[in-house]
Image (cartoon, rainbow, N blue to C red; front, side, top):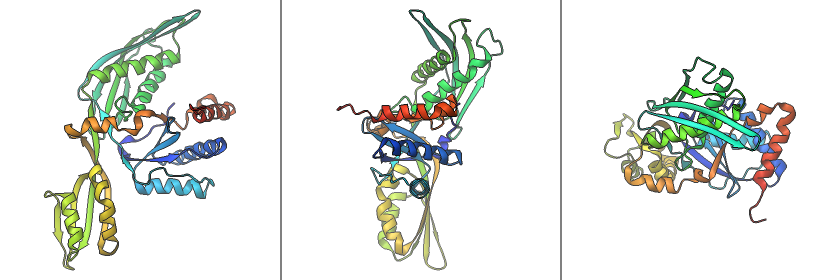
Length: 336
């Protein structure tokens, strides 16, 4: 079963270059898997066009922690392709929809049959993901195939349907379906669920979301440059407090895309003039005039989410072979 990623906590991405050798790539993936097993919450995408990996994280500190451990504990020199993080945009549903997914194929002597009906509902911001099975009759869909339906939905949400951006805050109810005694199998229901969720998503008026950060700064009263920058970034709705020592505290919720434009200047000033904390506050819809540009420039459009635990499903004896097959396929160069 696919590892659960807590997408609500992830808000930015970094791009790293492919390691120099296949063996190093294999070691890197296994090392990242180890970190995930220990409880670090992050997601990994393989970008096969540029031969890079995109890591979605909770923040700069967590990314630096991952890079440090890869070097210190696993002896891996990982090159960061872009030092500045990118905003992790997400999408969600705008309304409740019902849809059917059908995967019925006949190719020579091979038959495939999987049918499922889904009700997809938006959850409140930060609601994550829920899957509810309402089928009680094995004549509709046998219980053994229900996990495949859920995996088909989750894999589609993780990989995204708009610019490759992950889909969040969704409740999916499996309420009906169909089964063929000879032709149904796990693969057919996984594909049927993916088709069903895609159909529902396209009808649900998808919403593009962006992260807002809670920014708190404490600066000396006489640092006019920093105060000017802070006022420009935090805007008129920021909370301002004056302290007895003459310092000033400013607090506001700011879109991450705006914070990244100013943070280098602000942090440079803060080295000698104050302190700053930045934490994810919530996700909210992106302004309409920015949607098309954000989707068109999404780095995740050409990337594929990698479940770091996927190789385990075939057992430890086969894990190495399946991981090696992935590394070989990722290494292939279209230029020959």
